[in-house]
Each structure stands twice: as structure tokens, then as C-alpha cells.
Length: 223
Length: 137
Image 1 (spheres, each protein chain N blue to C red):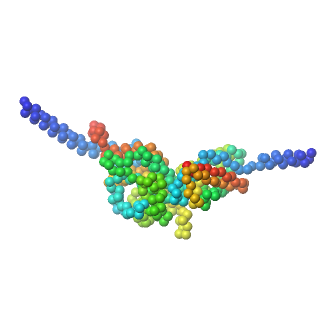
Image 2 (cartoon, rainbow over the protein chains, first blue to last red):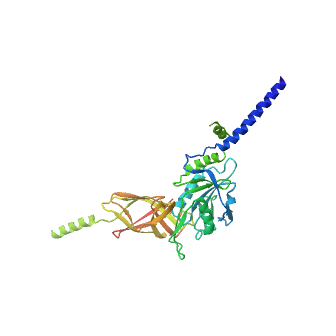
């Protein structure tokens, strides 16, 4: 009888283990794409092709620099009076309550990518972005280097009245935040108008989609 | 008697000559990074008069230049467009606000910090000016 109970126990453990394994593998395929957010979350995140920029400390920054962290990007310039400081201000407010890392410990970063390298040196970028938060970073490069990044991320920009002898010209540019995941892939696009509370709340949902919790996996498997 | 009547007529006409003026409410400029070469100015412009008020020029002793710009999304990009004139219709108001029309305060002559006052003068179509100040916030 005792041996029968032992065999029964082994069988139960084996069945439960097998079932758990099947259940876990199924949930990887059945993650629900969050579609009720202001952000547009990509169901097929886009891997970035190689690029080289420099950061606000004049250090090289490549596609590999995104790996292991979540990165918000905003493309603009420091001579922007309205859109860019407004976006950085929104992110400054969001930063007070935003998750600083996901459940796997990947930190969250924020970068202003300047599309105006003639005026925005790394040193100027550093002084500019760190005014909003010392944790914010800046990226820039040569026009060709910048275009390699903007072209693959769907970011548009253009100059108006740019003449060689004058430093007074305007830059038209896209105004969305982009979110890069820890694999260095474009995961989400957040279009304006920007809202700090939504950015904070939706990042949590994007984390859940990227790496569901055990409880969520259970719920997904029951659907 | 004739001179009295003339005086009365003159006084009546003087007080009814239109002089452009706006009520300016909620004027503010967000504090910008000390290295920033531009700041934005936002406010509500109310015209209580019977005539349109047209802003034809703007300046400030604290900045090299001041311009008024519109902001719009076009072809997937945010565009600014300088306004040569800006009309506030009679008995109406217009907003200068984030993401919309705004003052572009160019090349500050000092670093403006929260609490500092910025003085701005509007020039109007009738050649009058109106000077006001608002705080950096």
C-alpha cells in the first residue's frame, strides 16, 4: 500500500510537471497585445540595424547600447521653444513615479536625440537634458549617422531657413516618444499629446506584455 | 459759450478714440535650461473692445528678439510658423498655449530662473504699445 502511494505520488508530480511545462510554453504564444493604450505596442518589435551616435558625454552609443535597458527616445533639438521642452517636462513629471526597472531588473532610461548637431554639441546636450533630470541622456551624431537612426525608426525632421552664416533656423520634427526594449528593439510608439500619468501607467502594462508575471501567465492560459 | 461747446465736443471725441489694449491673463514662461537660447511665453489675450486688436510687433528688453509662432502637425512633423501679425477679434480672446500659438523669446540676455519677471511690449496696429510683465514658472 505504501509503495502504491509512492507510485501514485510520483505519477501526480510527473503529470503536474508536464502540464506546467505545456502551460508555460503555451502562454509564450498567447500573450495578449495591449491595444487599449495611448501607446502603440508593436506585436513584432523591430530590431535596430547598426548605428553609431555619441552620447552627452561624447562617448560612442550604438544599437548594442540599448541592450539590457528600456529606453525612451525623443527626437528634437535644444533651440526648440515649445515641443521639446514640453515633452521633456512631461517625462520629468512621469519620472517621479515611473518604474525605474522591470521585474527582470532592466533599468529605464530617457534620451533626447538631437537632430541638430550643428548647434547641439554633446556638452550642450548634457547641460540641457540634465536640467530636466540628471538621469536623462542625450544623443547626437553627424547628419548621416542621425539619418541611419531616424530612417529606421520612422522619425521625420527637416530644417527651415538654415543658412550657413546664421544660427537662427527652425527644425521641424516628429514629436512621438519611442520605447526601445532590453533586446534593443523598437517596442512601442507614444504619440502626442503626451501625458505623464499615462506614460507611467502604460509602461507597467508594456512590461507585463514583454514579460508576463506568473499570475498573468496562468490567467492567459485559461483563456 | 461757443468755446465751452467746442471743449465739450473735443473731450467727448478724445475719450471715444480707440486705443488698442488687451487684458492679459495667466501669462507665464516655463523655466528653461540655463543653456537654452529660446524660451516660450504663454498667456490668454482678451479683447474687450468694440474693435479688433492686431499685434504688429513684440519686443522685450530681456531678449534679443521676440516672435509669435503657430504650431501645427504637418506631414508627420511639428511645424512652427512665425506670425507677422496676430489678431484678437473684438469681444474675443485667443490663447497662447503649449502646442499651439506661443511667444518665442529668443536669445535671453541673462539666465531667467523661476520667479524672475519677463517684460514684454506689444505694438498694435494703431501705433500704440502695451507693456506687461509675467513670471518664469
